[in-house]
Image (tube, rainbow, N blue to C red; front, side, top):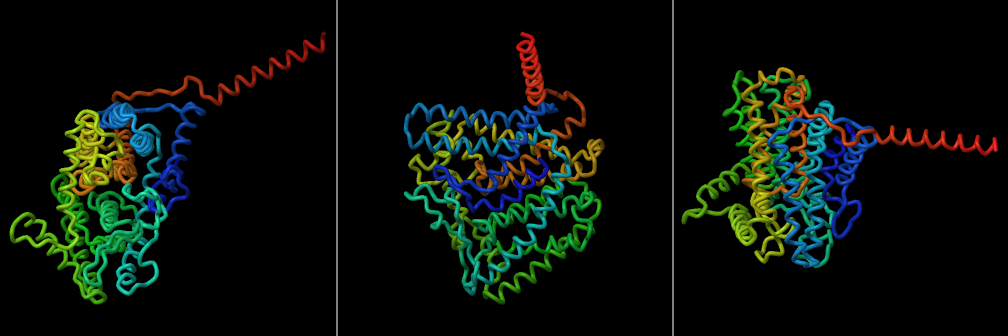
Length: 488
């Protein structure tokens, strides 16, 4: 399972590239990696008879209700009898359950904590190359150099409005301001690059500021990671990244007991220097200052709706607000069960999908899905916030587990931003991978605490043992039969 989970997080970056397609769904490396995890999980449960230790908690119940809601919401679609809606809902529901099950597996399976340590280290190393490529794209797009744009092959990226599933029509989204094109690196849009770098920021500095062992002991390497993270955030030119960074910093000063302001100021000063150098470098190539663009964009959002507001070209804030309103209208027409997963496009509201995760859950899974989704976030934020406020109650965890527990609240803040403020990750692995890590540490905490631990097996006798016994009985029977025939 160790390698399988790491493969899931590595193959996340290969999502735009399919291996093959089934019913206009592009099967990618991450699908195969998830399938490998599930095969190992069920092999351990059924073949080896592995016992599961778990402590029932509200977050886990909410996760179960999310899965149940996805199934319940198919009922109205089935009753409608519309073959197009049935096929789309079936594909999306199966895909959704397939993704959510990764969190279920990591709640039940006794994953070694070193697995998650190596996941984070792997992402940090990959992040260096992702941000290097992003920096190269700034120059490449200004001067039309090779690999300025990446051609995708995943048919799942093709909008439903297109009659033909041709991945060649899918392009990376990046608006230009003069000769400056927002960086995307390997991702489909700049916001994804920005969010990835917020994860990098959490992995690099939250453990360090909390007094835990950093994932890499060298301070030089730590500052290199910070430099690349800041560069990636800046050249993505994403308000999603700004909001995410603000939530993480705000959450830190709100909940943490800051013991060493020197560390904080070192980070701030270093980041400001990197921003200044990066902005100067970009301006020298493109004659555009990203810092000035940010200033204009933030001012435009603050003054949004007023007569004096000056909108930044390509600003998506108003579009997202309109999309949120349409999701709410769709929900009002189907308040209990929703319209069904994957069916927002077919409701005649001129949107492909909802731009906010919690509203998408409400529109497509009704009140059942909405309360389950919001409930899961509420319980996970509460539990991970408890880890921050009460570090003394984590004394029975080992150092690696404490480090993951300390990061979990900030990861949840970022996921909250993505699904409640700026975007929708409801039916993407981008939500359920980090959620799986958080469910792992929560279950580890409760099991090690040793209160109300439930232990059970899926089978009373391991299948390999049952097979061995049956084979032994069969061989004994054949031997007795042969002896009887010889004696006769």
